[in-house]
Picture: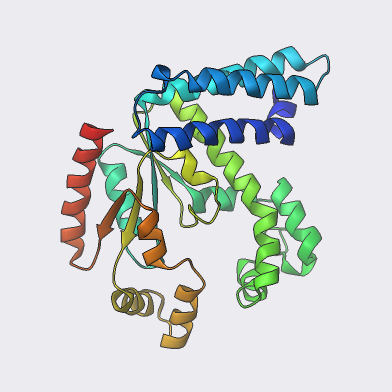
Length: 281
């Protein structure tokens, strides 16, 4: 089984995500103390390897197990890598925070960029979307007509759920392998998952050491969205209400950045938070 088959193997991907999610859960529970003190990573490797051997017994098992071992080892090596989850609501200032963290030296994994990459023509997510919604949502060059697709799913929860089912697993896997590459190969010290739907995925948050939420008042959020996107109040309100409430996100966060002041004040807050992250994590 070659590496291409390995990364497309859904069972193996599920095992890796499950073991890594377990590691992330206990890292948060134990206040992010180094994993090697608990032997959790070794346990995750052994359980994952045993399960994979049982579920995928074939001539390529050894190669796959070696890769699985290296994957889990990468998470152990990640003790020296802070993986921050960055999220917030629409028009709360998350992009400003992400940009500033990049300027300070963090490596950004942008979920929106990954989401565009996984739906390019020829990709599995692209094929799944076409199968679900038909060819009418394609441009002449077979790229997605985002405006047409958006109009189909925006006010239809069932269709939006269908679209999410076509894309989310591919986005998560792409972000996961990018994190693995940055941790093991690039030895990055600070990685930021910039993900608007970080909590909604119900998986991604467990890969993150601290979770940072950018929040502001409902009134400020509405005013900023109307101004930024030139939207009438009713449309802006619908877009905000389509997301998880900011208060709920803030309650799940380790760090909340209050963006009810000026952009300059937010930058100062990000700088102070960055120094705290370097010192504490």
